[in-house]
Length: 377
Image (tube, rainbow, N blue to C red; front, side):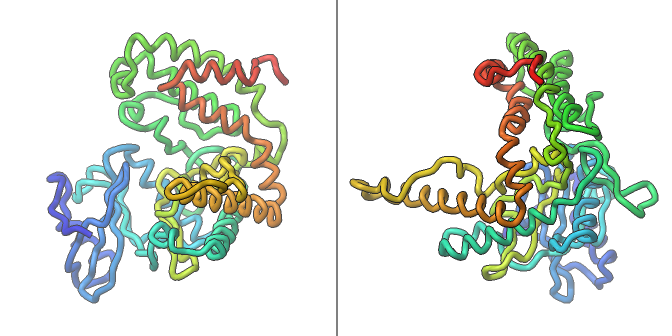
């Protein structure tokens, strides 16, 4: 932790300390130190006069209002509707022009430490036990929604509703000021089409093109990729009710966002940019198991030594953990496992909606290599 010398003169950390103490019913906040930061926020640790500690999350000026409102609503929803422990929200303000100078959330500090701080020292059996706990958490996300987007509190604050999707492809930078289709959508076709059109629409806006580092010479290549990708979306979208089911998703279930005490998960943090997505988009490895598709066998070690052997054994462990995750998921929820296996092409299509901006020719090659056409049923 670093003592915070205020890096942004627009942010009044002294006032934030006073607001935090008042909201928490404390006599005062004795210190505020920078605890970390992400792409769209900064994290502060606030210590009160009685020694209790809380987390202050200050948003950077992206996704104005929507990101904070949705993040708060999602944590409240998870707390109310599941047994997953997430930070309790004590106070928040989604007005970027508030006296503090930034949107903020004052929340509980989840006990424990990030799983990433312990993962390498755990035995294979302990890692498998933690994977079982993660599977249990993922299965609690199975609550079904009727639209694709992000969660918000309803106008009367008595319930929840699905609204605009808080997503980099729809809000980041200049995109946040454009008139884009951000949902909510009733089905996967609208969702994928909206992502493609978000890229297509920026091509007519010089400021947005500059923000995305899209050169004028590159525009035609992107246009040539957008049109065929959008046309094939209806033929790729599922008719299987299990695939079309819409579920809550934590966007980044990596080792740093899973808190542990000893060998037990104590909570899940960082619900920024969470949302409700089609099952085929949601049912996949947690991000800390990504890359498990590369497999090796134990008998491949002949002749290996040094770093080569070390690297091989690491990949072998990952192979075993990936296989264990699949078997555990199959044992506990066959539908989840089936969706994971059936949805590969759809997930690839989602990736191509992102590749449009950077690798348009790769998008066209993907369509050709998979022999996908708009005429398919």
